[in-house]
Length: 350
Image (cartoon, rainbow, N blue to C red; front, top):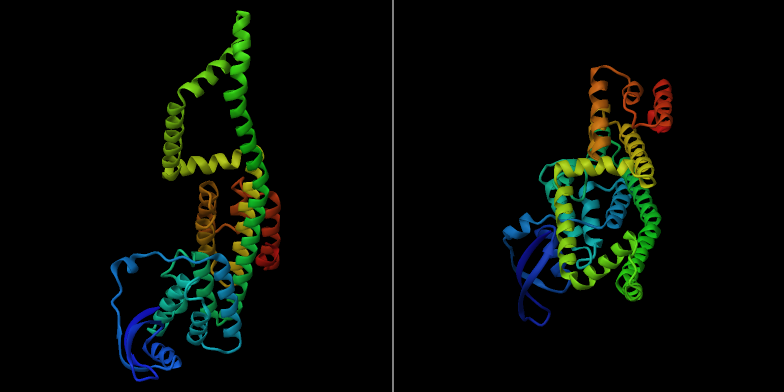
């Protein structure tokens, strides 16, 4: 999206000035004329350094809708630039400002000679490697509309899976919060009452009971130290988990949790199979597929395993053999891949 400053004459003959956002100069003139203005001068405004450095992002629902609509228009025979222009014009200037900016930038790059996958690759926060690679394969094979339609379906399925996971996690989180609140109330309000009763008896209290009373007294009397300690622990933990070593430790730990570990593993394997199938079906070479799938795994342990699989495949192993060397891949997945290799339909089996 380009911002222009203009001077124009309205229907009453009065000269007015203002700014107009548009894809290009012709689009800006057309927009102003549609408002009943006769353009006298039009100049492109300089883009601020802050705007150039800004990393734009869009909602997932907007991305899915745009991908689906773009696929439909290209399938109908509309050129890519015309389809992108239509998407830009229908996007809400206020609610979808980021989306308009990204579409405008992509359109400008395509008009300047870049391929579509090169243009969207300039916005990695919106279009990940999977998206870019599938579009590249679609452009190469002349199947861009079909690939975009598959991508829209893939994004919708991924969104549904994330929604299900969030729904499944909501109840345990609520239970933990309630349990923490009740425990805190008992320690701060109820335990002191029993402490006074026991002290009146003058009897020696059992160690666990005495510990609860001491803990209650500490929380009530030195609560600011407790808050400071909790804040420091949270800050330190977040800093550690953001480091490379901390992320590796966290990813290993996630897969070993009693209940959540198997769930995280199944989600990761589902993502692996779904992404792998989409890329293979789109005609992406298998080594590139493994590289992309590993980069989008979201878990260090799985990413490392996929990298090892890629190295073994590059040395000459069949995919099923390379996968079987890593225990993280379940037997069912191995059997499906082996069957897919035998029939030449790995994407269908996955």
